[in-house]
Length: 113
Image 1: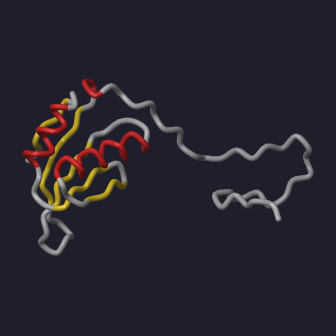
Image 2 (image 1 turned 120 degrees about the vertical axis):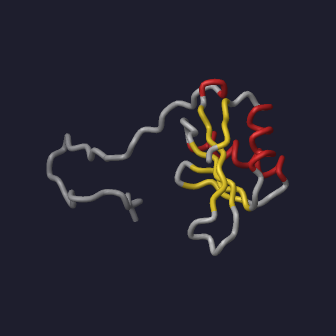
Image 3 (image 1 turned 90 degrees about the horizontal axis):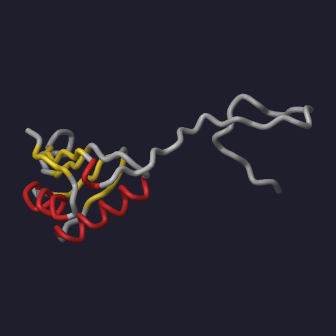
């Protein structure tokens, strides 16, 4: 059985032998150098049942590089967390520690709010 592309919409079948399906997927940007990144480190409690999380936003680049940075931050801060929607989320208030790690890695980072 042929592998199906779940993201295809609109075209079911074509008799044109030269037909090529065009996808609407966005192309990821290349990752900027750490010194050119402008990251924001903030504390958030909204929609989290009063629990605090540290949010790192503003990363520009490939999702794999964001995953690697998230993993490095979680390891250095010894905390759980996730990377989703272009944000790094660390469980708890680790603004100072995360900011220090980012600055040591060469990123341009600031505390937000």
